[in-house]
Length: 169
Figure 1 (spheres, rainbow, N blue to C red):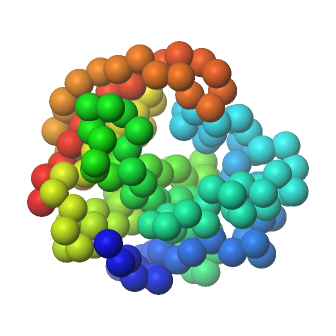
Figure 2 (cartoon, rainbow, N blue to C red; figure 1 turned 30 degrees about the horizontal axis):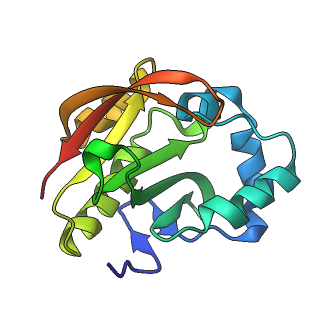
């Protein structure tokens, strides 16, 4: 699949992360309410955020969600790691806490899903940790259908129950 460099929505621009975004990323990613629900530890320095940009956020199909030119979160489509979904893409996202409740992630994710299906995806998966009720609401708003639960280890070394959902074109 060849995704566009940028994706414009009504209020947001999805664009690649840049190294110059490290300070802004650190401001959001150091908040334990953000990373721990996604299975990663809060960032401890701007340098760590820069390394995350270089090693993770520059992956194909990963976009900075920007509002008025400033990154406020991420949306991505990556190959799923769950054996039950192998061969398909999985939607991932996070949003800086000051921007919660404004519908930014459903808006950004809907645009990315539309692009993925337009480019030939047959199904797209999404999962959330059982206690992440905000993520569950996003998944429901996007029209995903619940399929199964799985116990998986996250980036913090914890085994968590994840709920998996699928969306078809």
